[in-house]
Image 1 (tube, rainbow, N blue to C red):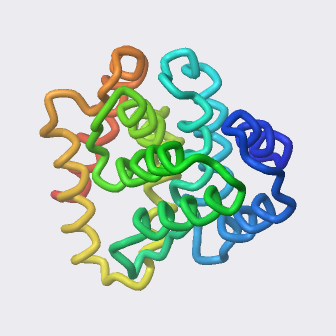
Image 2 (spheres, rainbow, N blue to C red):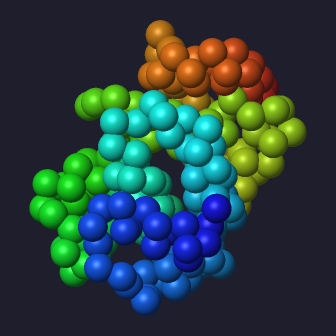
Length: 204
């Protein structure tokens, strides 16, 4: 799904003028050597999953473009990656003549992936897609968790374990990790098993 023609199709649905450069720019961003999980593979997985739940979106083309951009800026030493990604999306969408209200909604969807708090149905959908990895089979989840550690290689072990445990426990404390019925049905139980197991490992 991480292909130029797919991006071009979604942009065309928004009425955007054709762009010859944006796919290459995003591809380069996701190929940065400091990334191990937040790569083009993650975006491709999100886009592939979105095709299965596209019918749940209110504005599917907007959700799709938000998925393309939601980790475009990713630096583990920064606290504003989602904000910077949203700003990049807005700048680009304005350049290709997408309406302001559309680009603003897309930016809000990107920002929703920061704390995974949904303000509407499309935000619930994109945050669930982004968190789908939590409900993956155990071996896939473990590889994801290992790749996150590699991205934070500069953080000493004990502070990393404390911070990571806090994040994972935060998800477990939610009444439901996922916001939509589809993801609750298909991923909630496995996600809780994965998170509980990892938290127990951190507590050893």
